[in-house]
Image 1 (cartoon, helix red, strand yellow):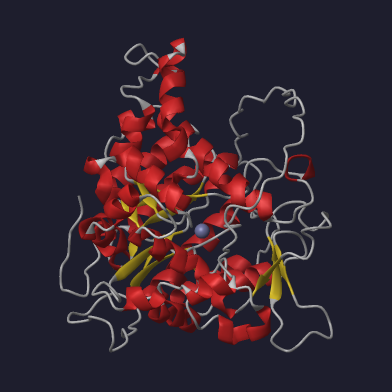
Image 2 (image 1 turned 120 degrees about the horizontal axis):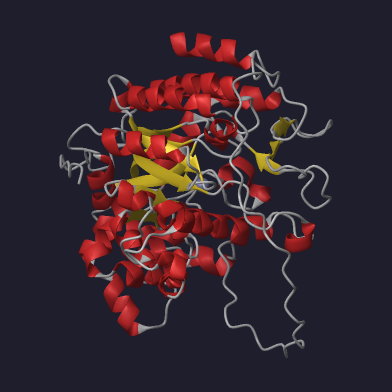
Length: 486
Ligand SMILES: [Zn+2]
């Protein structure tokens, strides 16, 4: 494949600078944050009895697993997964060859033959004792067969694959561009191969098992504005045959979405009809001062959704969504904290003279609407929230008119079953994390009758499972329907 040849050529440069001299503009300055005083220490709370003891991996959860109930529904086999990652083989090789973070390290000497490698993503992760061994990374990270197996177990018709952290930030600008182009070719080659659906699926019409969001070297762009024309050309290539048959947009790290250079990216994406999938990258609150020595828990549980929240808020505050009103932006992890905090964002904007609508916001642009209006107009959301309350919060933000903006996601291969004793076998059965995102569509996990009644709306459920993604991403479905783009 020509793309692979390019990839090899690109990767051989490794992390050596490739004509960086002369091409780099200094990144635009961002306001430095002033030091904040810590909140006064609160008196310790009296410990009360636990109110919820069922965890995703407990025996109680497994025995009440809704998988059987879901499997009995007509919808089983129709699901479109809009949030699912694949570490491409070429990308894995690149990370394995690196000596510095981000990198993949082999299992320690003497480990079992199927012991997982370890992925170190974040700067400083190797120096912190609680995170220095990285994340275990097995075949489900890069194997197409494993992805298909996961899809078949979970009733997924189509996975819209996306690359994942650490993307290409660690490469010099021109290397990053070339590697992105080659990885996009590799992604397209995987997605355009034919993979039949299992006989149990309602596959009366041929359906794509894989589509994708492509790579863009955005962080390198902020180091070298001269990359912008090449990035726009790459976006045009993704939106033109043959790549357009599998590419539905691009995944963007949730940082600097209000950067001046993003104007060219947004112009191209709106013009070409490409969807932007915003995904957290480094997390907000780096370092042990914020996250303590609790491993990856706080960076992933809180840092990631906060990062998405801040990035999306900066995007809508920047005025770009007035300049490009047809941009379609898919937010990972149900929009982070934005569904919960949208009202507060509205209130703060309304009371800040710099953002009085119609009088001109930052950079001389006008913010024509309240932030929550942009959230309902330009943004789409996955339902990767693992909790009924988060799902209901999203529904409350969007209201009846926005009910076609939520889509099912698994975040595979992250959060696999943790029963290590069962090894590979445990990964062949339904994953509690993914099943939770099914379960919340049936109103499980709540004791409020009113909410349960709402969650029973078949139309809402169908929309989240497949109809909304089919419409946004132009994906034919097993029933032969094709919702078409908005
Ligand atoms: Zn993800």
